[in-house]
Every structure is written in C-alpha cells, then in structure tokens.
Image (cartoon, rainbow, N blue to C red; front, side, top):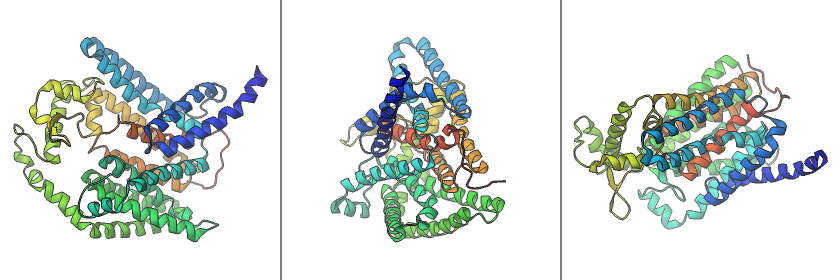
Length: 441
C-alpha cells in the first residue's frame, strides 16, 4: 500500500501543478475552466494534505476557521428565523463560503516564491489574452471618444484586475531592470504592458478605480520611503524608490492625457454630487451617484435594525425586493426597470449580511494576511518586491471594495482565491527550511 502511494504521489503532484497554472491563466478568462481547475486542486489537496500538513499555517487557520464557523452558525440562525427563506440563505452561504478556498491555492504553491512569480505572470497573460481578443479599431476609437469599456469583463471589475497587475509591474520593476539575460527585451515588454494597462484603467472611467488607485499610490509611496528610513541603503528599496518616482511621472502624464475622459465622468455626476445634502430620497435616481445614495441609505437602515448579526446570507436582491421601494430600481440595457441585486459596496454588503461581528471576523482574516506578509518580510523570508506587491494589491482591493461589490460573481471569486492564495503561500505555507537573502532589524 505504501509503495503504491509513493508511485501515485508524483502523478498527483504533476496533475496539481497543471491545474494550478490552468487556474491562474483562466481566472479572468473562462469560468468553466477555472471552476474545473480549482476543484481539481481542492480534491487533490484532500488526498495529499494529510501526508504533509500545513507547517506554519496556524496563524491564518484560526481566523479562517472562526469565520467559517460563524458563517455556518449565522446561516442556521437565519434559517430558523425565516424558514421560508431557508433555500436562499443556504445558497448565500455557499457563495460566501467559496471565498475561503484560497488556503488550498496557497498550499499548492508551498511557499515557492519563484512559483509565485510564474503564477502571477501566467494570470497576467490570461488577462492580456482576453483583453487583446476583444480589441478592435472600432472599440478603441469608441473608448477614446468617451465610451466606457471593461473589454471582456465588467467595467469596474476590470479596473480592479488591471490595477492590481499594474502594481505588480511597478513592484517587480527592479527585477526586470536587473535581468541577467535579454534585459532589453524584458524592459520593452514591461513598458508596453504597463503603458497599455495604465491606459485601459482610464478607459473604464470608474471613479472608484481612480480614487482607489490614487489612494493606494499615496500609501505605497509612504510605505516605501518609511521602510527606506528604517532599512538604511537596502538596494531593493532604493530601486523601488526610483521606480515609484517614474510611476508618479507616468501617473500624472496619463491623467493629463486623459483629462477629457475624467472631466466627462465628473460632469455626468456633478449635479448629484453637489446636491447630496438636499438629495430627495423619495424620487428615483438617474445617475450612478443617485443610485448609490438610495442603496447606501437602504443598507444603513437595514444594518441599524440588527447591527451585531446582520440580515443573513441571502442575496441583497431578496431584501431589496421585499422592501418594495421603487427608488431601488434602475433601467437595464433594454431600458426596463429592474431591482438592484447588490448594494454597490463590498464593505456594506458584509455589514448588511453578517453585522458588526461578521465584519470584524472578515477584517481579522484580512489583517492576519497583511501582518503575516509583513512579518515574513521583516524576518528576511520574503523578497522586498513581493512584500510591496502584496501590500499594494491588498490596499488597492480594500479601497476598491468601498465603491462596488462583485465578491459573489465567479470572476471576482476566482481572482480573490488566486490572489489571496499567492500572497499567503510564503508567510503561512512554506516548509521549515528558509533561505534568508535579506536581513531585517
């Protein structure tokens, strides 16, 4: 039996790695392929994990396990409270719980930072493939003339994904410029991809994307320069400082070039923004700012009814429909009025469904990931480039989530499980042998 297990194990490893790279390439490209790849990883993990264990994953496992237990108990309580909605609450639980599959992805990476880089490059290749596949001269001309686009994805979601990979290109820039072979080729590819994704961000014309990216840029700059003061003349940080200066120059240049798009977006919402203090909540809205005002007010009133535990995991659309408020409707692409199916903010959704207790548990898990990453960097077990990318991507995602909600859609769920798995792999799932290439005080 043991001999047979030894013979099967290499085959399982190869299958798992194939599924891992397939998952990375298809998370933003193919729902079917990404679903199959993820569940192959989960299934093989169930076979192999008992043999190898988690190593140092306890710091992440505790908030993960407590949050999962809370989701189960909150769903049970919601089903008892409203038995007629039992099916909707179970369906909601299934959607939320699948956001907690990222430790499986992290386990398969096993703290291999080289594999992390390959996986990030593979995911970027998938995003670029889908984007280029949808581009034609007419689409580009329409985008330049002011038509919003997310290419093969939803507009605001594309802003999150493209912005995250822009941060990847910025944070890993020192390694590109210090490549030992084909440096000129790699720098050229890096520059073309960075400029292309940067322009694509402006094509989304998303205020949430613009604000989230600007805030992240400011915070990341502070982090790098503060870290430089404490670390002395550490070469990676010096290179990152130069890279950030170049990044800010490009950011300002892009903003100037795309000024007409920014002004157009502002003018579309100007009247509502200026009149928010006297906004008439009894009247339907006609722009995105007005829609958000109605949704945020509904969410706040609902949260105040049960601030600790929330309304339960059933979809927001069910609660919005039950309210019967005509102001919570918006026209679809056919011009027909339909109920909103979300609250336009991930943070509000969590508070709405799971209350303050649930929100704090989600925040505990999120902060555990951030502090685990920073702890590994301080100990010298995580490269500076990956440390900064981890912080930048998590900060950007946090700010983006203030303005929109897509967490229960396949593309966002795949992206989150991939990103969180990649970021958690080194701090929590590496083996006992650690290579210390950089020293931290």
